[in-house]
Length: 260
Image (cartoon, rainbow, N blue to C red; front, top):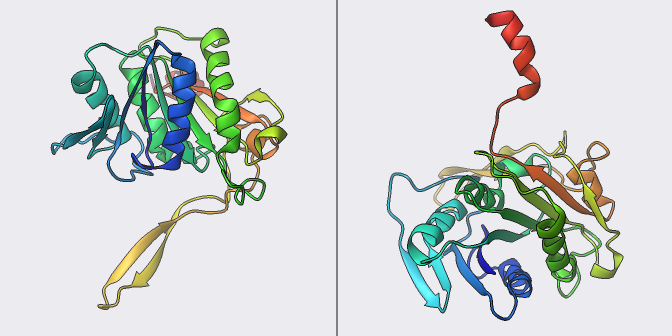
């Protein structure tokens, strides 16, 4: 199997090393793992593409590249410049911190998987929740490392992989626990943490100029039952099927009756 991987934490992020290990396991001894990842951290860029300016790309080693762009840029670079053959699978992550609930909308990790899906490829985004159960471990990515390959393999073997224009991709969040305490997998919807909204905090620089820092709310609060947030906090691997289609299909019928 030929696999393309990326992330949003940057080419030197420890989560990318975890993803490389997962990808090598899935690809097998005769497979290929290609890495095209941002040269610098790109957290929070969502599905951004560098449409108005070029990006530099550098070869760091065999099948390993760094690009001055977003995760979606890296997918485009991998598919249309770096690789001579299309991959069989795209993996994005393993993100440091969760990409559950409303975080999904801001995530560059999700953006990389989203671009792969738009390019007609099977894609899985993976993130490692951080919390009291794993923050102080020697390897806080332990749950992802121990369960990542089996989770990807289960999705490849048993999940739905369609060929719709807006094809399915999958978002996986590993719980904030040691690997041996993970309870199993749950198929869940995207949740919503009502107290985790983003805002700004003002600070003055040493020169007296005023700057704003973006800051979010607490990440340890649960959401509704059956959602990615709650499942991961309760110790499960949270798996959410997603599409790029942003249409609110549940509102279509009423709007047609009211406005057409």
